[in-house]
Amino acid sequence: MANLSVRGLDETVLSNLKLRAGKDAVSVNSLVVRLLSEATLGGKAGRSVVEFHDLDDLAGTWSSRDQREFDRAIKAFGEVDADLWKAGR
Image (tube, rainbow, N blue to C red; front, top):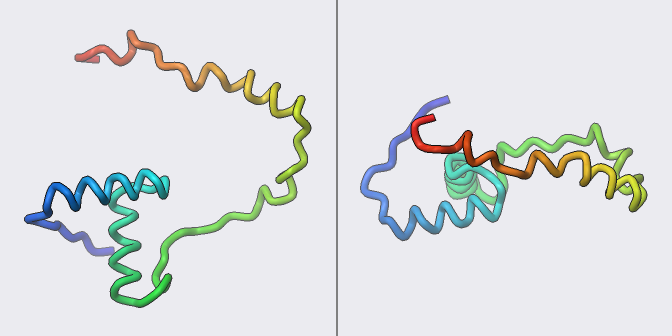
């Protein structure tokens, strides 16, 4: 795949791209590639999003208790160790 640099990008445009990428849960690069593909190929043509269905059979099978246990098990992954994020490390 080819690479492309964009020069002279307005700060407001960049800010809006970042906001939209965040809302779409994708990188700015992925968003720009998608937007360029849609603009040049029309509609959703050239869309590079891959859908996976290997876990579809599990959807909706957890009980409330399963969910609580899972949330409790992964709670530590959402905590930041401030000592690890000090400047210079």
